[in-house]
Image: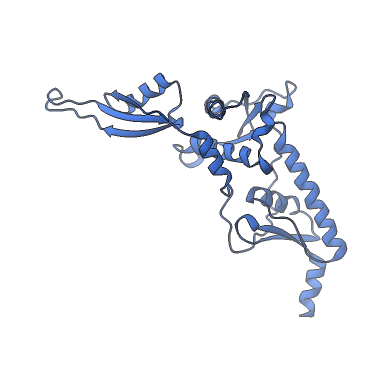
Length: 266
């Protein structure tokens, strides 16, 4: 991948020149400062401009590398307890719903998020278009195109990796409560995934209550485990915990009546 060198009165000006000439965002460039600017004696003698070397980031490599990470919170050695106080945020992108959706709020990072994701996808490359909207405190980006489904990946890993990368880019300079959450979807995958997890969770709950024995679900990433915990949080007849480490971490559904009887016997 080619390197380019730029100069300016300071590093910030040199970076701005690089972004303009390469027609890209600063977040999509790898930047190396070769020399800082100096004012010189009396601001005249020995004055030197700042100099930087840049190259475009290998976005495809970063996305593929992120697929191998656990994009959720690091697994704890302690079991995860159900959190009844939390609410499930149904991922139903206002972009995918269509023109009948009410006009959404605006957000200062919405246009930038669309532009950055479009540039990332152009580097992969795929012929798709990014549509965006802001609703319920989140930026929703919908990838549209004939082959957009290829970006979902195995169990949504590629889509999750793109979402993880874009959130890091947008929020790297933000502090405190100014951070924004970005949700990336295509072909309504997020909603369909939630519905599938809900069906599995309710089925396992019914099995645990019927057999009065703990039921184990298949291993799943942290984001999916959290959703299953929340789906079953209001079911007074069962409770859930997570066990295992890394990619083998899974949820076990316990029937309350059977476990209470077991504790009384002991």
